[in-house]
Amino acid sequence: MTILDEILAKKQQEITELKRSYQRQSSQKKSLVSLYESFQQSDRMNIIAEFKRASPSKGPINVDADPGIHTKMYDQFGANAISVLTDQPFFQGSMEDLQRIRQVVDIPVLNKDFILDEIQIDRALDYGADVILLIAAAMNPARLEQLYRYATGLGLEVLLEIHTEEEAVIANDLNANIVGINNRDLKTFNVDLATTERLAEQIKDPATLLISESGMKTTADVERVQQAGVSGILVGETMMQSNDLKQTFNELRIPLNEVSLHDR
Ligand SMILES: O=P(O)(O)OC[C@@H](O)[C@@H](O)c1c[nH]c2ccccc12
Image 1 (cartoon, rainbow, N blue to C red):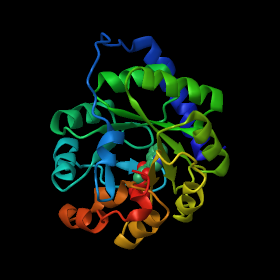
Image 2 (image 1 turned 30 degrees about the vertical axis):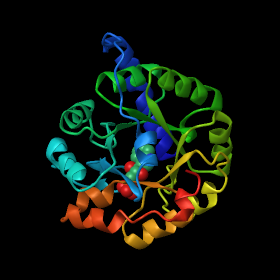
Image 3 (image 1 turned 180 degrees about the vertical axis):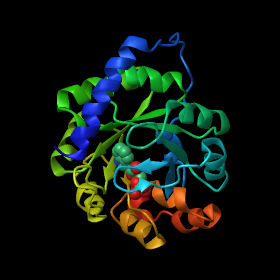
């Protein structure tokens, strides 16, 4: 049993409970902020800065950080979007964190969780998310497509996360417009930026927005994934542990070159 299996099993229990207790809000149409559109307009590396207190691979990262104060600083120093880890058992996050963050920033907010059911998508919308994460490794392609269509039908955007060549094919088949290449293998926790280099070229549609996820610490790391053609990065640990967020953003927000701008 991998850690991913363990997380997904626990998540199924949470969903069962949620279906018993969660009251959906009235489905009034909201006007959401488009991550896709706003990232297309930037001439610097787009940064999705993540609020993540702890993780199964690292243990505690920054458990005492205040979600409102911390992400307000992300926004001030140049984040283009905020990712909020809302899983409680393995990441010590919550939907209340997301709600709080929604109150303090106007840039797109991503609900980062192990989403396996429509009810979690309804809840993401209710709590103020603009974007949800769907992880190709977490379910079969047919179910992935159902959830993808459900979310986009509600007006949410989807960051579709892939880690293997097979999953890149799934992303192409779905015609996903925002694809996240996770450098971390969720089964072993190994991080390798070569994953981005390998998979970026497998994504066929030039209009797809490519995001490199995990393991980014230095300017050199960002330059490397940019060469592979990505125009956004998702950064957690480095943002949660930085003593000087202004400096961290300056190091990571490099100007985009032709490689990542060529298809605009
Ligand atoms: O802390 P890092 O190495 O910067 O990684 C951030 C993000 O990519 C990572 O938190 C992540 C990527 N995909 C996920 C899926 C579930 C939980 C967490 C993740």
